[in-house]
Length: 441
Image (tube, rainbow, N blue to C red; front, side, top):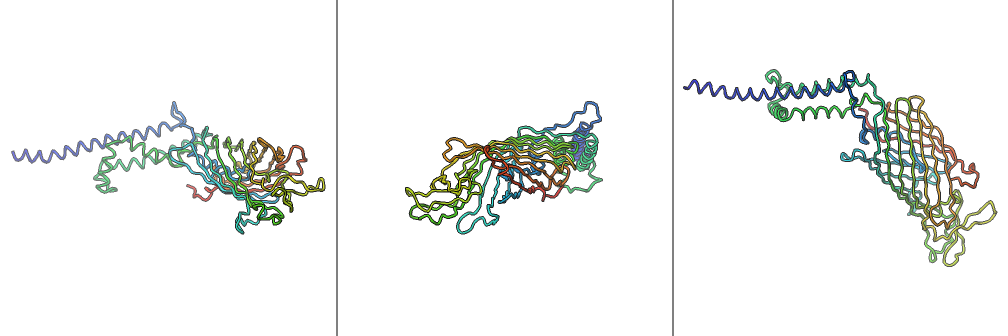
């Protein structure tokens, strides 16, 4: 009787261990099959092969898209994480913009930016108790409309599948050690028990974890080259714009407050389309913008020295400039009207096309139309801008840009009734994306 009990005492734990090992072995078979199936369906030589889903999210591609920075009408970075500098005949504009993404919103981007325009190249933005330049803050949201990965390469797919298979095999072997723990001492007992529990509980969950971990690497996207994506952006901005009247010291403080800046703002929506394949790189943006400006933004006043009359009338002063066409002063508004809002509407488009030297050289153009909206008490004129020139893209690699340089020449803020050559300008700009400083994986 004692022998039977002793045999039973020995046999029961052995039976329990056998059952547990059988569960482990069964789970390993399920895990191995799931991983092998993933490799098989990626084999483009197999019958019935279907390419992986080529839908593209903002989260996957936004760093690539916004690494090539093309500035809009305002010479500021409109989208993406980058900083830029633009210089024209008499002023410079520095701009910086950043983008934030959230896991729950893979197809939505939030961005904010700051731009500073120096009118005299002094770059003393605040001195003597007042702002001396135009300073703009902006915030916006971009929503993806469509996105596809572009060119499929069978050779790259085969190489990626080999890398995928090797990665899966390495991860599988970690759990395969559980099939014979006596021959392996890689993990301690606590780790082994945890792996056993995890494996037996859900081998398919482990397979998914391994697949997802591999999917986060660049190899998973190797067969695809390029992208096609479109989105719509909504943004608003606020500008504190400084100005100076040549002889405002003639004003009597008791009669009139002296102004040094005016508030401006914009509300904009724009449509964007980027296409990058093996040979061509095309960027397009169409936009509409409502602007709240001041009377001093009239194109007739560009480069004019604004003066104030020395004698007040009805407790106010008159603003004027010397008009060389008539050889006399032209009075255009009262000093107190400086803060009265004027509404204008901009609409236009920007595009860039790069092809030679592996898409590092191309052309870009900007076309803008401005028209006053509502009452036009200050004789604001409709005007247009047309700028074009070369664009140079320095490539960090085949996808990412390290910097973008443009030289634009053309006509800016030209009235329909005047000779456009009177508004001829040349602008040079340089833009560098923030991710140029990120270490390549």
